Every structure is written in C-alpha cells, then in structure tokens.
Image (cartoon, rainbow, N blue to C red; front, side):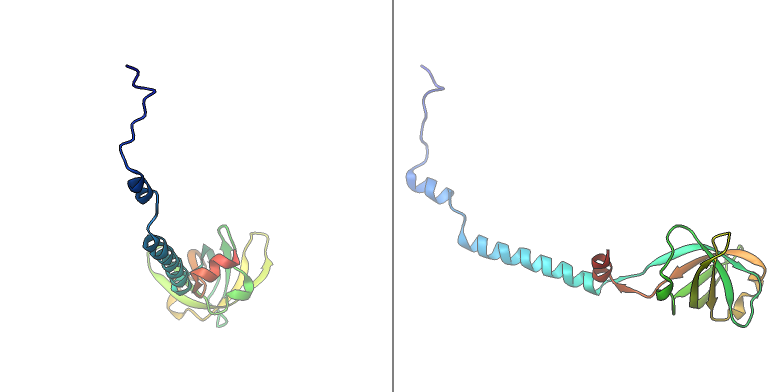
Length: 151
C-alpha cells in the first residue's frame, strides 16, 4: 500500500472556508490598535525632553567680573548661537561642583582649541581660579521628536 500518493481529506468544505478567513473584527480593531500605538509613540516623543550635553576642560585664569573662561570641548561642539542661557557645571578636583549660566560662546578658537565663553559670575568658585577643571554644558531642552526630525 503506497501511503505517499494517497491524500486524505479530514476537513469538510465548510470547515476549510472558516479556517481560511480572517475575522473582520480582528482586521478592523488590529489596524486601530496599531494606529493607536503609533500615535502614542509620536505623542510621547513630542513631550519627552531631550537635553544636549557637551563636556570638556575649562581653563579659568581668574574670575573676573565678566565671567570669561576658556572651554575646550571633547568631541562635538555646540552651536554657538544656541548656548545663551545654557547651564554650565564646573567640577573641581576636590569633587565640588559649581554652576553658572553661559552668556555667549565665540566661534574663534585659539591654538589649543579653546573657545572663549562668558558666564554668570561664579562667586562660589574662587577655589577654581588659575586652574583647569572639567565641565559639562547642558543646552536648553527641546522635545525628542524635534531632535529626531532635525537629524
């Protein structure tokens, strides 16, 4: 008896037609669920803040009233037009941090790759005079969606 050539139908025609159909409710609500998830992702990305951070070494020759310091960035540099109002954190070797607000950042760099920046006077940072310290520059937040669309 050759079993390979023999095809046995175990299901009736009515059962095969039921199995072959996708329920219309599943199609309708499936599309709505996928659309809802996409809208929720876009809405969440437009609400979530995205902070741009830059770091490097700051050279503080003396804390003058104008708050001029020299910044050498590691890697990417921020756009000089967007730094006004950005927070700058200076970290001393003793572990203390000092916070200020950046007022400007010049495009021009010296031979060591440093850019002149002005920040609010750091009166609490007298211990940082005539030294090089690490810094982190945090630009004002924008939405994650806007950041992704700009790329």
